[in-house]
Length: 541
Picture 1 (cartoon, rainbow, N blue to C red):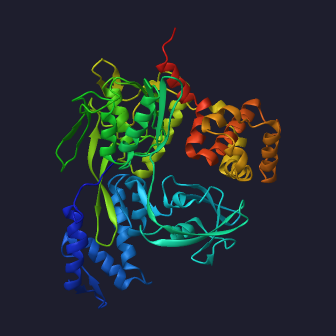
Picture 2: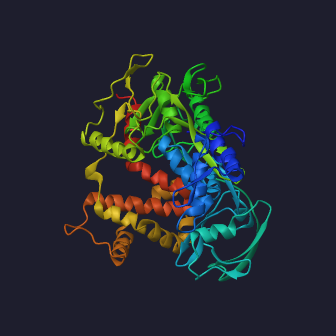
């Protein structure tokens, strides 16, 4: 969980002494003695200067040349990792790319692209971005940038982003090959702020139940949610499935604002407290529009931090049903502080607690490696139980909700209804296809050849209803897989595997016609988490 509201120069006193004052003093003073051989060694006279003195000593005396700046960066990085698994150092080079998903935008020409056969292919222009406004289309090939050839030169994704991203208001000339025109078309694109959306899909599953999937908690998440909420309410939504699976978190205020949509006035959402930080509480207001909407939240082992704040607030206030698997267990609050060289640290400054008082941070005293090993071991143990609706809890501390439901601390949030991993649903053959990227590659090539055909479906709903992966298309894909050296089991493909393959193909083809919304709408059909949530939200006759 990240809080990003401190002044730029702010930094804990210890680190300021070590890394600023210490470096300055170290360059001005020379505390030294001679050894019996006459060799001079630097001796740290003040404990606060030890780190700087060691780095200076290595820089001066090490057998090989070293990069002092890199030594300092590594020392800070390793030091912070010794504190806890979520305090860390970010170099200036890394900071921008790490912040973009949380800030909710970057500056560029506004396309989603893929490198296909050593050519930059536009997968989709981003809605409202400068490329879409100029008329750049899915399937266009970018062959030149500023007059220089970029096709057939083994260009990388990083190099493409370096060419096309840039400060808003700057211009870039691109030459695009479009099959329908059979010639190159030149565009001069003015770069602009491009949104990064945190809501992957928002749609109605039936006449009453809406579904919203959130991938991260950024600055724009609450605003995006309000827009999705409005759209679904207009379509008759009376119940909601909020999907937070795989959502690793983000900004604290984004989580509290979203939780506010579901909780009545003055309900406690979360509180934070640290050794040097006083207790800070967050309560719901009267602004929420979904306080009476039936709610189910989906979580899994990838749901962390901000996702756990919302889940904990809903569960502790008896507000909805939590479905899925035990969440990650990250209950630490990080604060980002910047340095003049463009680097930053994210330092843990508090823990957060759910309304009943649970700190769901799992133990980390034995180090980062053990921290993650224990997590996967406990996950495997829980899933091996195979109990669909209950889960024995070994946690020692019990908490009670206002309605008397027993909750457990000890790391992560236990769902009200557990969906164990279905080992029968796993397929080595399908996993190999997926890891090799063949679903995406084949679907792109199909959609690229069949763009006019896909446009004949007037809407995503029409595509979902009328497009099927027939035996001819399925056989073409299996042949394609074989040509890429992936062999099926000697027993052949089971009916269950065939059904999954066809669904994945259809979803990926829809993704190239209707973005990720198309993909998720189709993958919802056989999703066990979603189907269980629908059962819970649907009254039994």
